[in-house]
Image (cartoon, rainbow, N blue to C red; front, side, top):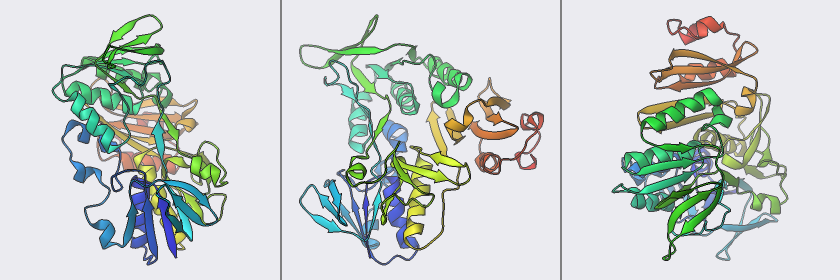
Length: 403
């Protein structure tokens, strides 16, 4: 049997590893448009960008892993077509398959305003993007305008400040992360960044990027002002790479529709990672998340499915971030947080606490901030839908295991 995996991220790497761990002895090909072997993306906006982590921490596997495990890599050779059990590559090669795993991920949403193609306007998705950004930010003293206030945008703002640059965030939102966490927790991140010297310009719409005579960026224009800039970083979300899936006739709706075992609507083809819109038997609905933990979980499930296992998607979506001296882990799924209220356990002012989102007497999401070794218990409360007493939930003297 031959399995082809299209993608160069953590989901693809995990699927290949999972197949070998489960005793699969057939042929495995990993096809990627990138010039690098498969790697994970979270360090790109964290330690790798700051220089505290090297490529060894970024790559999914050590040098030689693919050869040792008889995995054939096709780098810098993107798949261009899937039809009749064959993957056609840009180079002209055609690879027949018995099973196909799509792990094509997402691409940064481009800024669609005049001047967005000026020199000095950057986005972050790849190792090469991170290398370019680090070269721009090292040495400090640059005026950086960051467009967008989501997770990646805030991590990049923190990195730019830590490297000694002036940072202005321009956002259409009143507070950062409001859509993900709500206003109160978004305000905490706003306070954090302002304390570290970041200027936050809320409820602004970027209308143009201004370039000088040499074609390099000099300013970002909004509806009512011009903000001087030496570097512009765009972090306004991502667009799913589902074109191959759509052209191959797979059902696509906010990602590629898959069941709890990552099977798509076309037999023999699976989808994992960012693009997988999966049935979640525990949460009771479809979910699609663009997070590190999802890449690992869905990659393992695909390997299980292909090798006759029965693993299903049963974990709670998980995300982590590091910004300045704040470390955070979040467990939950935003659509389930609608109508929930916050219960705080610990020191909110000192930023050492756990925030719980509670609805109908149950925890639907949790975020531990500078409090460690509690994520497993938080996930248990969510996954098992434990009925809780809010007073005990808020009381740090009551062990989470006893709730």
